[in-house]
Length: 280
Image (cartoon, rainbow, N blue to C red):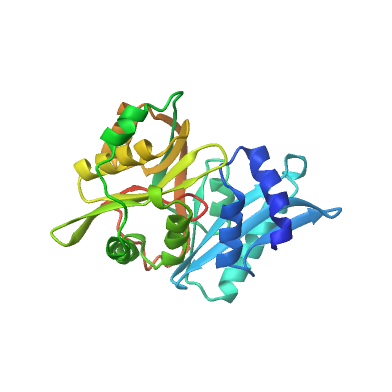
């Protein structure tokens, strides 16, 4: 895949109703210029798959899309196998992805096993109350010192360094990067990005429920959009209850899966929401 293929990828994700933007596709290509792939029929893109390697500790496969008229013809499997071969050639010990219920049996046949469950939650609202924007956000603008502390903390939470992605998210939407210290340690942080139809919160990390709530409320206060998406850890029951109390509705399940050794699983004890199924 190259930059000239992005419009074809956008067409497929729009057919699927996914939330990614051109900027997301550019992030894939910037992170892995030789590890993103397209399938073509008659010179027209009919399928995509992306990969990102994190410090060669583990890699992610995402954006596995096939045009409706070409499904059930093996294109998705071929793209997956191409992505896996590419990562195997790089000697990445672990490959991860977040699977829909429809995709899970396919991934299992390719050697992937389940790690834990995720849930997508969505919120739609009609009017942004400007009076609540000021009251709902108690966080100051992000300082460079706090941002660097967050990036260090995230390496332990995620299991590898993904600073190149988080810095890009911050530069693209600094208002959606929120965090705070407590006694010199990072108590919680959240990043967000603008999707094609909804603002997406993630990663969302907190050491306690009060911080988690304040981060979520600040994110909602800073956005003027009428739609939001969050991909939460299913085992974090407080996250689901909090989202429901604020009007979010359960959307669909996802399963985090891996192939290989999974030597760097990260820490999920403080995980409320992932960055996204396409990034991890």
